[in-house]
Length: 336
Ligand code: AHG
Ligand code: MN
Ligand code: MN
Image (cartoon, rainbow, N blue to C red; front, side, top):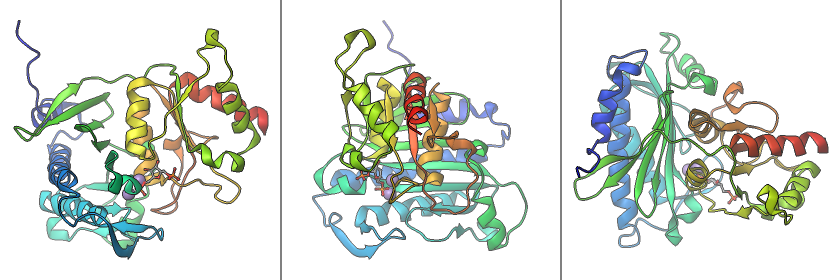
């Protein structure tokens, strides 16, 4: 019996190129460039602990958070790969305060916003970490820094592609170009991402909820009521749900995508917009989850409809199976 034919990411990108509105191969090249950077980052993640790439640099990033060396390494690798690829006019990274304009001679039609290393707090304890990317096409021909800043602040609904890399027990790349969601697993033996999860669909309802419940006392009443509802013992409605929280957005979303359920990182009185960044965490994850049949909101509106004002702005995030996110909204509305 012949096994399923082996489909590499590069073949898949090329085969599906006709689906892009702009089938010129530029977007394909960007996806290739990102997958190349992912392989290089993966090699360092796997070596981490053996070489002095772990631990803390003395630097802190724009958010005042300690920047671990792997963050900086990943940030630089992605910029290098995209700059060489020549398809982008401007980049935006969690690790850089302002946009990163690409010189006119290397410039292209696309914008890539990215979280080079997601889950930094988990680097030193060998827990899964990730990379997140969000791709837009430029809307104007302006090349001024001010014009490029505007290009980098499009609504999430304008994304032409989004994806993540999960450096876990195996390394996976999951992405969408608006025609469904597909997952690829890295075969280190041949250095290729192979199609392992074609056409991923999120279950309509799950049995997991995923949040940092340590902040429970800071949440609005409706959300507390939702948690109290979820942990009641009522097998007929699939309760109690189980709590799963890894603390790496990529890993928590990947599990939610495959198993269903709901992830949320809500706002609190002291941090009304929560912690997660709209442009390179919430928007790409929302695009992926919606393409897989799920829902993503900020507790009020669709994440992808939010009009961005700043590159590093935060947004509350409620994301996952349609039935579960609708149920959270029901409790939020009742509590307001
Ligand atoms: P990053 O490492 O890119 O700053 O992202 C960390 C984020 C995200 O990965 C995760 O969901 C969240 O921080 C966890 O926050 P808490 O530690 O507050 O739960
Ligand atoms: Mn992150
Ligand atoms: Mn990060």
